[in-house]
Length: 177
Image (cartoon, rainbow, N blue to C red):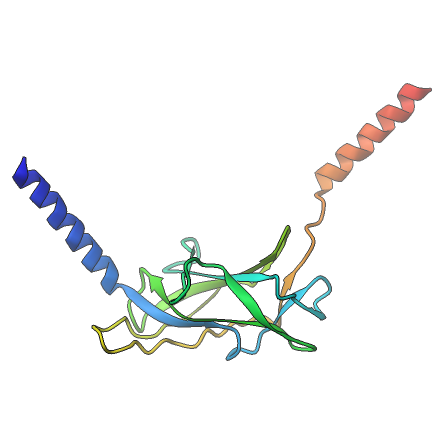
């Protein structure tokens, strides 16, 4: 029994060590790319109540939220509202799981404020170095968001919902006659 527990613990340590090595780094902000976050009509900067998540992964179908260093979760608050260039966020740097330093990762920016949300297109770029042993620090790559802007918008009602409401209205009118 002790041997099985020891083998299980050793396997877990090896799995963690191998996954920890495959983590490149990226700066988690939109200052360097100059792409602002907007609300509604793409001309109003997102308010300071908005949040952003940077999602990254080894392929476009495996994106997961990055938890920036110094943050307890993946939600990065919007911190600067700029009049014409949108709003900005800064989450320091974060790890991209599954992609080693200098590798290519896929990214998406997801922004939200209450029930409203929006996202960028998915793009790929090279990431920075893996986290070296302390006291050294990594050299994160700059997040280069390709979109002209990221818009947090009100969700539009679906066509099927509108058709259903129209049909229901017709039935109610017919019933009255």
